[in-house]
Image (cartoon, rainbow, N blue to C red):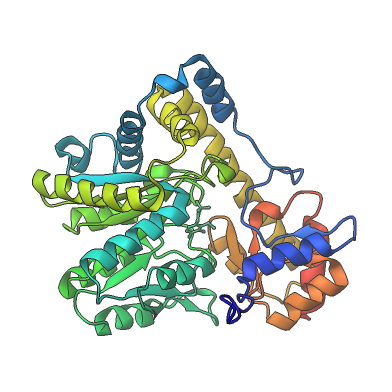
Length: 399
Ligand code: PMP
């Protein structure tokens, strides 16, 4: 008898597969459009000045004397303010419960645990398609995954009527995961009017909206605008759940800083919810590493640092938008009969180009350009110096 004889190699997540294939390619000018980390126009990782300033300030304070729970509470409050607004009713009345999390992934996982603890027979509806790890996270937490229709491959936009049908046809009181802005992988978001309709239908059906917000500010450059879906649901009286990640919006990837918050009906409910979230978090990781939490809290709490950060975030969003326009223009210049409008209609870090898995393979083989098999590219990997090469390669494989 051998204990682990039945353990087989796990199936690789598509994003991990792209990373490995890229690393193995010896070609010097290979381009990785697969991984969703922000890069500057030279293709380099980007450390924000606001983060450097916060780092310098942290050096001055006596780390060992800080209590983890004080830092956590401050961090959660600042995160919730960012999502719902400084003066929002939620914040003023304390109608939320939250805990720090290991970035967006950890926040989703904590929510899945909460779901399993209090709604053990529930399932989660994920958009089709969605970030591939959503499937892994809920599966690992033992929650069955269902999908609702989202993307229309013909229009390369939202399949709104199918989405509404699936919302209507799901059993009453279902959990739904929604991307409030910069949907990953499609870059396709509902309009304000469509969000209102979705929120209305959720009320009719008594569904629970869980928002995974990893890109607040990276879609439009305006953080309030990017959180408008949350706002709409909140105004309609939904008790929204929200995962926030500071990975992309502060370029803090490896620090893994995130927050899970849940809106509550009254103060007693938020006290109960907070204690339960803390219990789940305690069992999963006791306290979280404090450095990243301090960094984020400092930036969000200090008006000057926050203003600088907002400007830097806007610059990132602008660069992404500029690359969308240039890529579309370069493709249309090559052949004006092809329509690449979706590249500028889609928003945020990602774009689904509409390429087939074979075309994606050809881009790897012939042009050393890497992306996930669904044809998703990270616009952050496109730069002024590689955009013509990328456009030409996409054109070659599409015609
Ligand atoms: N949710 C979505 C929609 C994402 O795109 C990502 C990052 N790719 C995450 C969650 C996970 O974020 P983090 O890196 O903060 O764990």
